[in-house]
Image 1 (cartoon, rainbow, N blue to C red):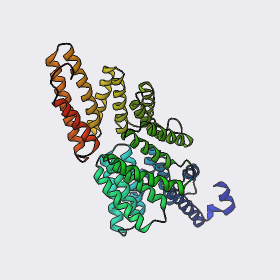
Image 2: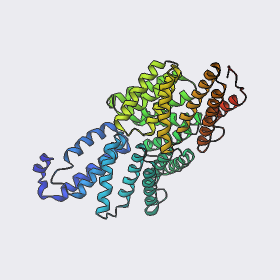
Image 3: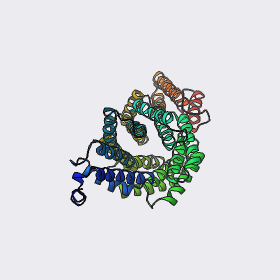
Image 4: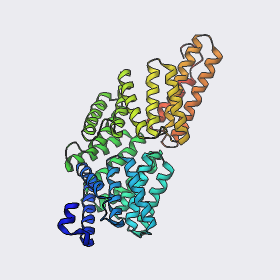
Length: 427
């Protein structure tokens, strides 16, 4: 900046400086559209160096602030993204800026950030406000409308409203494919998010097909070891785990983790996310010590980056609690499961169904043990507690999924098996 200041006489030439900042903004947009993370990292460092330069006026600083918020969103640095996006939104309001597109875009990214940070009420409000602005001021086929629909779908998926998420992503994809097919990276991004909605709905074959389609586009259009490829590989690994192919899941997750480690530190939140998914796989492979190590490492990173009541934290606590139960550490397992249930119940997130399900399994085991020791009344009480928990789990997940979903079928099978079992020692 100092070199340009001397060379171009920027101190006395406001127009040239404005042009330079706007050109930089356009260059950032190009990197964002291509999801070029290497360029994003370089541009973020450059913007951070010059954003407080005394020659920059409020408008120029506002441009860079907004773009930095977008960059950090894509780099999964949600704390920094939130800070820059909130500053941008605040300044737009203070200046009574009538730039509808910039306001809508800022609201869109900020809404998605809040959903990651588990402030779901605020996330939905901001995201819906963004979509309303696009629909009011631009055509129904506007690129921003397509983006806002997909981002709102992402928010609803994190909220647990998977059907709504699917519908919004389908609407977004229709606009992209009809009007913006020349931007395959963004088409791939929406296809992947549609796949995630199907994954949460238990439509695993459909989800896998969409994710594979998205992955092929990313491989064709982007460099090797692209961050989005790592993200898709991890989700595909999760689907293979749900379908019982644990070795395939493990291989995909290890590939994903290797890519993330090339881009991020060992303590990055994306690294923690894949460690959690790998921990689930090792639990299913019955390598409980390895599972425990991975889950504890993941939990530590999440607790360092987010509040302790974060949804992902409760998921890890639940899986770790189950691992302890499987190793015979009943008290420790029950403590973690109860903590996870308490946190997820406060947020009313649908994922609390799984904590209830695992606790139900625990109480059935305790019922068997009580019966063996001759405590028939206690055994019956524990059994009833398990039934109550499974019914609660079924009720919660039934609001999000169809009766044919694998999750509901699994819980219903457990209930059926309990119902036909008499209070005998072989319960």
